[in-house]
Length: 124
Image (cartoon, rainbow, N blue to C red; front, side, top):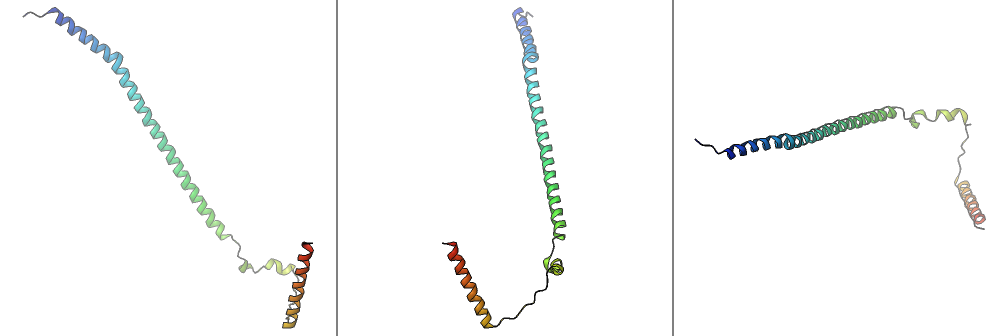
């Protein structure tokens, strides 16, 4: 059987070219693609971790706020409960007089006159 020598040379050239392309071109390109994919995955993991930390921090702040509101609501003074006991010792007891209808009418008239007089003085 006679094999053409040029066919053997072409086969050798093909294998050499295949090996060179595989080592020089394909391997670095595939490596770069793999590194880029790995970089994107690492970024996504980092983003997820940061989002989880932010979510936990927000939950912690909400819990602290709820606890603060609960504690603060227990310490709000109730004026009806204390009945102004602080002012009872300081302020003198003023006697309250009962006024009849004529005295009330006289007080209303004096008050109206004073208001009119002050308004006239203010606009002069």
